[in-house]
Length: 222
Image (tube, rainbow, N blue to C red):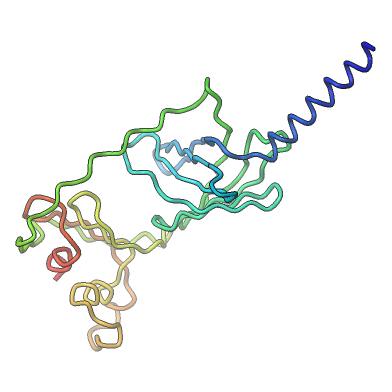
């Protein structure tokens, strides 16, 4: 009877481990080592309508949660973060408590994730309050702007707002003119060849308070 009880307990433990490995919902956290700093990353994975959903949090800064798509094929877990042009791919361990993988955002960096427990869980930061909007009748220009050549090691391309600042990454002069005047690429011709080949990063601060809308952002780039 004691031997049977021992086997039953062992079987239950094995079944529990198997269920843990099958279920990847919960918080997964790891540290991304980028040049000169470490970034704590947290993925929150949930099951909604029988479909996996994921959200990315940057633990050490009060940034809004970032929508993430996730798929799983056996032990392979893949996630895509469209807004930052990033991806993650990793292998789930046999006990279901860790994922060994790689984070890519231009460059590829190792990122190993551990399933968070109540004792080890990092606190998810509160999102910052929404920025105050710029007056709709404002006609802003850049109060100050910096432009520098893009880093070829980080080829992601994006134009976005960070608070009130306009951020452009890996954009050509042609790209910026097309955006500023809402042109189709074929409508813009001529100019030196480098305006279509050389890429730049730009950060600009408006001379009016508040976050600009799209039309005001185009005014500043003009």
